Image: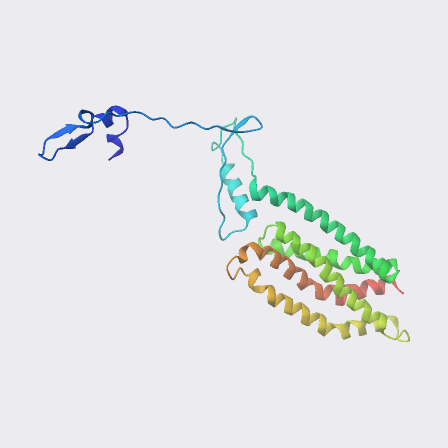
Length: 257
């Protein structure tokens, strides 16, 4: 029935029906119309009335989706002055996890620096090698900025992984330098170590980039969730090669024997 025919209880009572013999009569002649009201429900959070709204995200990451929702909700006149909104659920869990991942990243940097000091027992060498992952992190931030990717929990996981990956490659380089004969001039040893390690470092770097390329490009089912992780790691791997083979030898040469 059209809405105009059932707006009120009186409209429903006067609804016209057609009998088998063709005459028309109102519904109230053969039926009793009773109003039934559903039980109202009021949800509260901290003694304040609240309405819970849920949604499902497809084809987008959580960070960019939340930003679009915020820009829509912040339009003037959309929400009354005495009302406000809060984000919970998976977004709140991600914020808590992001703070935890930041703490993990700081602890990872400190542990890696302690390991380098314990391994080489030289403060200058540990400082020079520790600068590599820190510079690689700036490359990760640049890659996220260029691609317009949010710094979400998966991207922070990539930051933590880059600290370990770049430090490992720096250790490989310095181990090669340490094994060379000390009869060689100091600067020639730095260059020779880079030449010897260039091929394995380049091969592993390019292999990892190619393996992560489908995720970074968003190819495949569910790849959008892992895309920030792949972009973060690829950005760190791209700057890893010049950092370890050019910047690290330069720092070691600057610090001296």
